[in-house]
Image 1 (cartoon, rainbow, N blue to C red):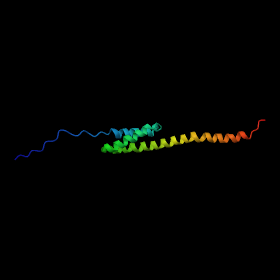
Image 2: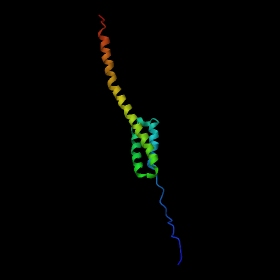
Image 3: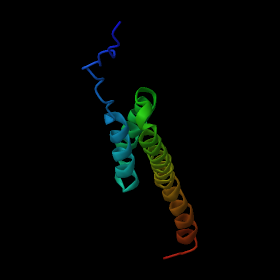
Image 4: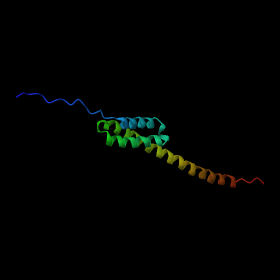
Length: 109
């Protein structure tokens, strides 16, 4: 009876890719740096972050970092856009209201 070790498997699994997680982190950093006003950058970071978090368990930290930065940038961009739209529609009305009072009191005849 001979004792031979079992043969080793010459084929190894390829390493898991972390492309989605890295893309999410890069997009999150770019959106924090100021590209959040192009809404597509943080939106793409959120989408790739969720996909990377599910599909790539080895690099969940990168995906989570990308998700957090992308969500924060997306919320800030939406709040800033809402504020700008509010200013566009509200400020001219206040100028017209105050200008009527000023010109009514003056009599040039």
